[in-house]
Figure 1 (cartoon, rainbow, N blue to C red):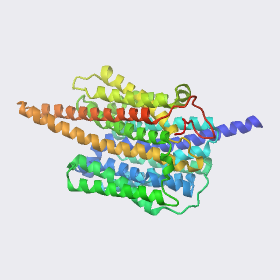
Figure 2 (cartoon, one colour):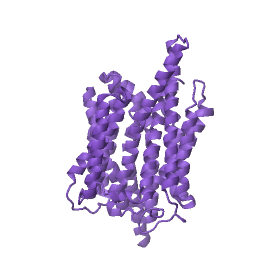
Figure 3 (cartoon, rainbow, N blue to C red):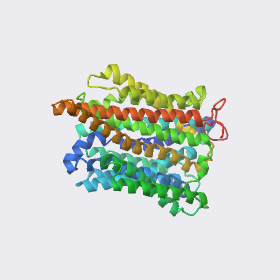
Figure 4 (cartoon, rainbow, N blue to C red):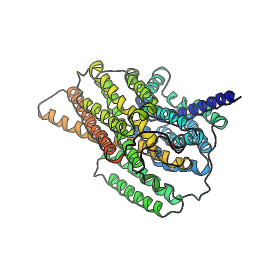
Length: 492
């Protein structure tokens, strides 16, 4: 009977992990799954070149702006309940996106997907605390969660390419709906509900946080297209600054704040959030710039481009899946230093790409180097970011991990796109001044110059992540699970 109970428990734990990890994978996939479908979407719905960016930005903007509120909603109303709400909203929004008949309808659907993702993603991570009481099982669950989070965006490129090339761009959205419906049904049968916190809603905190983060993300997005001195850009930055300052002041004085500032009292947690922010900012540039380089310079098809990232994806998943073993053998600090450093080196190598760069000799080895860095980073940051947090309050800690990842990625793309645009303009002017006449030659050389400039800037972001690890993370003597929480370093 004991063995039978143990077998039943293990089976239910595995099913719970499948539900949680699958939902996170679906949400992370949607960050990049539309990228290779953008040309088809542009032709079908008559997007202008400038407005096409909103197919991506509408999702990341809303996602990043609402993550804190989404994480808190799980603590207040129950994580399983809000997880199901988020997944169902994601399903409906995906169906709406696939049926879109106008650009406005598609952008609205992407924004609704962002709302669903902002609810489901932080509650999914927090559900690990609610459903895995055994420290060993919780560590294994966190490493798998980290693996799908790290590899999901790369898998999105492959899946998006397959669906677009063999079915239609609409299936980039349709594919989410049946998966989300199955997950929402399974959640009610398999996942345990968390204790609800009967606290008043911090509506002012919610409003200022959403406005602040959304204005900040929008300001960088707008700056990439219209410049830093543009009146709308400047106004957005001002709104963001005022709103975020008001948010911090509100959270310091509120009896039941939306974001309990205790999460920043531990230097390991704060350092982990910063590392996630910086590495995500650098990482998103890899997909953004390298996918364009492979297609426009090396002549790859969208499908071939997607599969070019597959070795990196598989390597990240293998390393992240064994994150618990690395944490035990190495401890968090070496992993959190190596991870961003390896990614920084890879991005620096990519900053030297040219039209003669070989995939097998240059790009593939560099992608694999980057994969080792991402695997180490994600598998150490996720547990460390939850250091010392009571499982009953895990929603806020998990939300901060997702906020750091999504806002970092959104801001990173915007900042690096601005850097790349400056590089393109500078190179084009220098080539014209040098007497180059061929428009195609000028275009190709200028684009390469822009992308490599972006890679150099991204490399600096990743190095900053490694410096944060050195300065902020305190290494524990023997990484282990204690007190019913997850692998922790010394409190600081």
